[in-house]
Length: 356
Image (cartoon, rainbow, N blue to C red; front, top):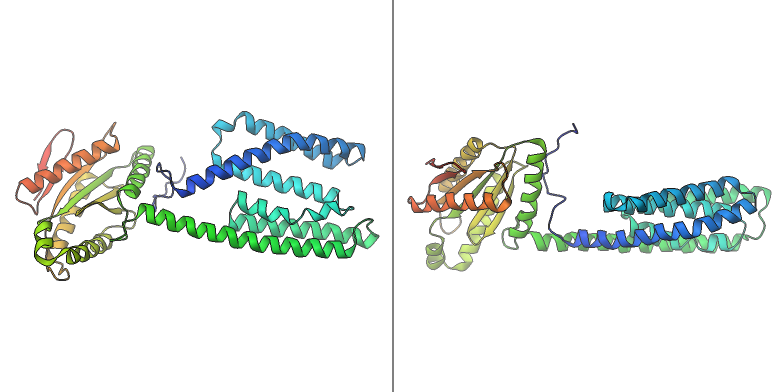
């Protein structure tokens, strides 16, 4: 069994966001690279064999066979593995081609294209490593040949190609870094509540799917707490909506500060907050909910002082969908409100239990 690691930040999930859109573009481009390799490599291998470059020709044909194998099973291979395979294939093709054709100007003039390819298909870290390794290997081979005299390649051409390579690499790194930063900003805007800076409903829905998948995979318990501020409309009417916003923001901070690192807190909607608690039984969730209820009642919130909240608690059960868990938590919250507020209720498939 693989080592268990708690999913702290919900790195993968069901919601389609900018990351997955960008991965799809890279995947499509990667497939074209594989198609190009299948078409071009046999032709280049033919000329290698004709010129008695048997090792280079054999490597090219082996790469073709591997590409064909990948295409046969492409639907079973994760997209990011296809992208990685295309990156390494391009690296190998360009390296072999560059070394075998280093005795012509054409063999090094195409060098500036490679940083764009490496960095687009991979990421800033891996792409930069490939750019550096490729240039070091080509430089080593070039100067090794140069000691014995290399026909057709002047030092001026090598310097021009090297300068263009470095500039291309710098521009590519800068562009990909800015794109990664923009991607993170867009994901944050899409999945985090602008007011409280915790997960919004969309982001939390993605995280909940991850938590449920993890819980089912390792047969771990998973519990949920849905809480709602009591008399929030009265607070808004009495102190104003700006004070209500300040209260929501501060409540988000209080909740985050009183749960574990592996727990996920979200503003589910309005004055409702949803907490997902991996590896937590229903009984443990009840204890945590009571702790939060007591904390909120004792905390002096800005402008309004102490507040109370009602809590609905449930756990993931067999054959549950996300909607089933949310429905039970909402039912428990409704029971807590109906019982006089500042209450804890637990709802399972079999029973409804008043805790406080």
